[in-house]
Image (cartoon, rainbow, N blue to C red; front, side, top):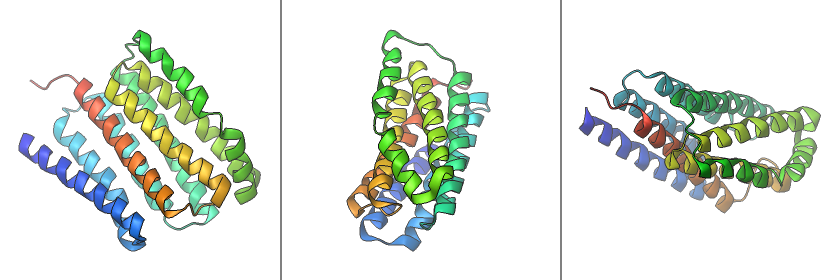
Length: 221
């Protein structure tokens, strides 16, 4: 089982790198398949490594809705973008429940997560203006709600006391912040380099969160 888990982890990492390459070269059809497959790989890995713990199941739910969000955002229409935001919203709620189920050790350094969330919220005024220009009040309201749930996910991630989860949550929020800032500047079609940065931080963030949760689970007997 351990060797199979290592194989799945390596295949998932290779798929992520392949997806970043597709984004750089603009190979959209392959990207539309490779991107959600990263989430599939992480879900399979959780199933192999965990032993049915509630936190692991909530993690699978979070990854599943991330995969659905990836699929929803295929294309560049405002409707599909909003659908993706809604699905990722549910995914972040599932991440929050994962961290609560895992347990909040709240070491002294974890309270810095609140300050980090506040700093990352500074560009939100600019992001919301861009969202209103792209999709009107509904899109601005959706992104405002999304920013609250992802900030909650970040703070709870830090309070688990896991450095892996804390760093992963931070990188994940950086990815979403890049999306928001580029939404304000370029609509739903950011420059090629920024697209790669968004994808790298997106995949690395969720991979680190997954690793952190799995490392914090009780060791199967």
